Length: 228
Image (tube, rainbow, N blue to C red):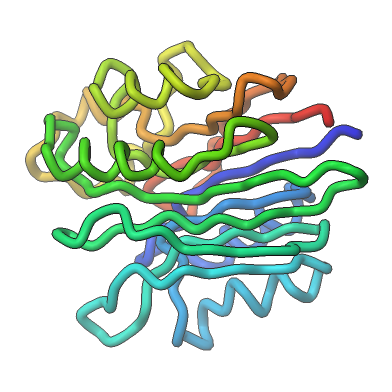
């Protein structure tokens, strides 16, 4: 069985119309989203994707200044049979949500997460977050995706690569330089920066890592194909 896995930080300021259109057209089997906003009828991502047969789990991360709730989420066309939220750090609250998904005879352990934004600089809190994430990862049939807010040469990504397979080792940019708001960052470096990843356990066969140059968010969606 071949499954399409998609991850995207859809940005709490994102333009919902092109985001929604892309998610529908992608026809992904499993979707991990970050910065999904609840409490907003104009951006009802959960309700929208449920219309196309997706099961869903959301883990609230924090309240925005306008009172809306931002969360990490997983959507699946296959049944979600269990779910759990893991707090990665009390300071600068961040979490990872896990969905156990029954795909044929295989149970996949799928995580969506979003680490602290540190302007692409080393951070003790970010290291704590990835250490706590690694502690809860099953050893097989596991997919971890999200906005790690860390470049490939960072300690965070090196720690992930020590225990999981990075499904793309090339330096492929995942930021939308036209929308990414980082006053501390150099505009040229943003255009070549990778912050978004899909990792899998070493027992899984993957192919076709792809960055989709889709507007609507300050990050681009990334996807892979897996064989189970």
